[in-house]
Image 1 (tube, rainbow, N blue to C red):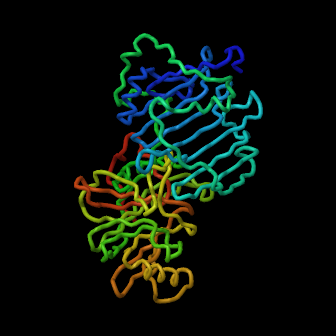
Image 2 (image 1 turned 135 degrees about the vertical axis):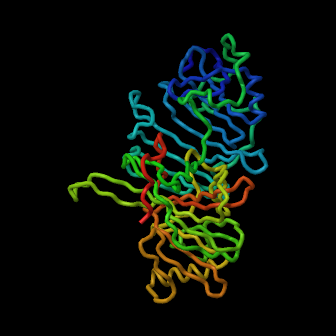
Image 3 (image 1 turned 90 degrees about the vertical axis):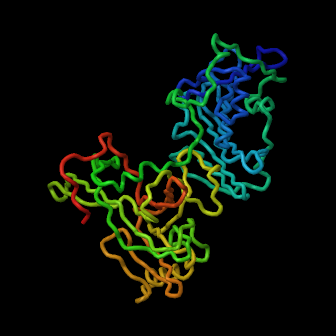
Amino acid sequence: MGGDQGPGSVVEVAYALAWDLEARAPWRLVTAEAARERDVAGLPYVVVYRIPGREVPLEVRLVSWRDHYVGLWLYDDHGRRTAELDLRLLDDRSRLLSRRTRTWQYTGPDMPEFDEECPRSSMELFPDGKGRITQEPRGARGPMHTTVPGADVQRWQVRPEFEDWPLVSAHGRKLPGPVALQAAALVSGTEAADASDDESVIPATCWRPPRPAQPGPLDALFRPRTRVTDGYHSEMTVLEPRRTGTLRVPSGLLAISGPDNPGDEGPAITVPVPPGEYVLEEALVRVGYDCEWSQGWVTRTDTTAVRLRVGETPVASWGMGLGPDDDPRLLGESEIFGFSTDGATGCFADAGAWESVHRLFERHLVHGEPGVGEDIPDSMYILRTRDEASGGELVAFATTGDGTYPVWVGRSADGDVAEVVVLVDGMPTVLPDGIAGGAEAAPAP
């Protein structure tokens, strides 16, 4: 490749507002000066490197400093992505963490991009020195091997200046050197291309900076007569929330965690609240379906979320609850932080009494010791323990499976905590017409 380029190689450089994933082409070219302005302002832009006369790129750099993100994508001669490097801007904003690296080794020219049988590998690194390397030599359908990266892995690199980024693909593609970069020819009107921050005009086929998981319309799950779907049932109707007692938090620090984790590690997430006693609720939906086993129409009530209400003030904004070591700048698209459970259980608790109420939880649930806990019947909330010395409590609730569950903290317009919500399953989708018609929905059973 590139043998007709003489003693060196020429690579064209183009700047654009976005990268069209379907067309594998830049969307709305801008000048280098406009891209530099976006770089200084932290706004998204892309840099595309190509061999003159070729449609497929060598390399695409995707930058959004406001999202602490730089992506580097390498392509082969067939326009398939062969490597991704996810860099994160942390610390003093002068260093980049090599957060995630992924590679694909296509076994032939006809193998589609990201084919399930394509051998692949990935490496994840964290600022604390931890990480993992995953290899799938037979693709996503084959076995997976996981190891820990060695100390020689380069975890950090200095943030380059706007003009000083190295052309990584020049080494992997073995371009005859030296490599000379030249500006790509600009089409008419590029000089005046809009460099504003209006993402609404960018086509849906274009890359956007990775965003952590979002809470969705949580308030809709507690609004009676709202119509939602979970993707399996075409329609479910939200009922009145069911109140299931209260939780005492005399310490003023609310804990949300998986109570099946070791108690000496402390709760996964804590949220400061005024000392007090708070209402616990379940979000309920009624769903009807034609049941094969009952040979007829069946109606049942399910719980979609649990909620602790700190007050009556409406929620103005939602945020993801974070543990002491959680850094949202490390999250990829739709990724979460939360509490983990191996026993399909979460809990709300007084963090000030955590060791005591957690120990009582284990004695009651694990060892079956009588008199140390209170079972809660007919509810997604399953049991309560109480520290007699402080009055602090733990109330455990069931989830629909093991794994990690995000915690959503709702705040008022003044920034005060108003609600804390945990989805016990996925977030249902609100149907377009929103509210069910007719009479008021039946009250919760």
